[in-house]
Image 1 (tube, rainbow, N blue to C red):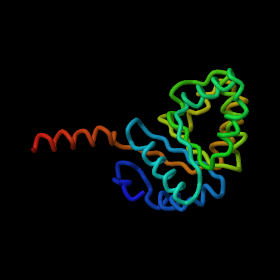
Image 2: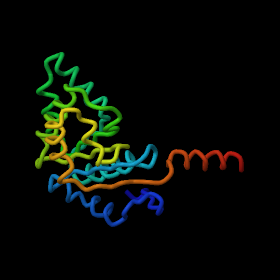
Image 3: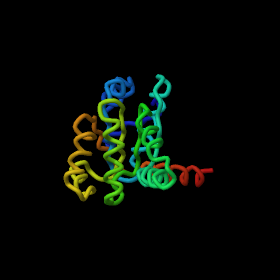
Image 4: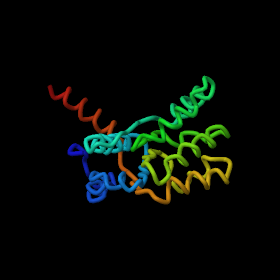
Length: 182
């Protein structure tokens, strides 16, 4: 948490991050949605919060949306589906990165609804996405399922909308400059 940077260009509220670092939101079973362009530090921030949660005794699991759906599909095929769903339901803090890279298919819609139904008001989830929340309905073709999922995710969530240049690009620029100066 101490390595998080707060330049004005990032649009990162220090007071909100401080509040989230207390882990009270996890105890209260709220969610967190972090959006922003590639490289602005969404994953870093989520992992810093997860690390803090682990230090406070909570369990956490980081996965990317494509891997989550792949794991659930494999689990259905080999008979472990319910067991895998239960494992996602039990973790105190589930981080789903790369949410919204593509529209969900019918199987993925139903699977995400199952995951979020099991977690709603009993566990916390962090969604990381390049897509603004206002456009999330478009990612879930079945509008009834979209309403059900987003009702369980968005309405009890804190939101952080990061902005600014890619931190990876900035870091690479600094590294290249250091090497030139040597």
